[in-house]
Image (cartoon, rainbow, N blue to C red; front, side, top):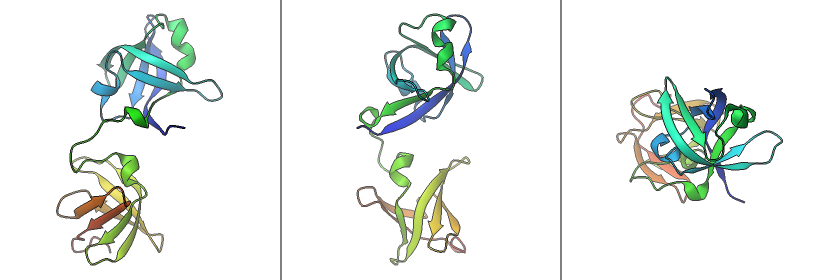
Length: 171
């Protein structure tokens, strides 16, 4: 059974020609929503549907999509609240030192002297760089900025991250 990853949520219809309004959850909208791309729609309690994108444009803070064989608002109104996902096979490879969130969450974090700090439980994206929320053994959260001065090595296969803590970072 494949692992599924959210790329967006359909929040409403848009116009009368089968367009849907999507709140995007992907860093790659130009790839995920390209004409011909396949997305899978998950709805609570309903059969999943494979959809093929026929158009994509942005409007305000939304991505507007149309799908093959869905050309009328009445065809897509039932898609509201649906989650658009891709399976793991559809994920593209990333450049060196870039990672998918699911690869980082769950990794154990160690200082360069070998001391275990905790486990990454969440990733925040406040602006200039991501911040990894690490839960320590005493259940306290520490915030690790994903910058080269701090994060020295990431071993996805071992689920292990080595950092060089800046003064005051772990206090």
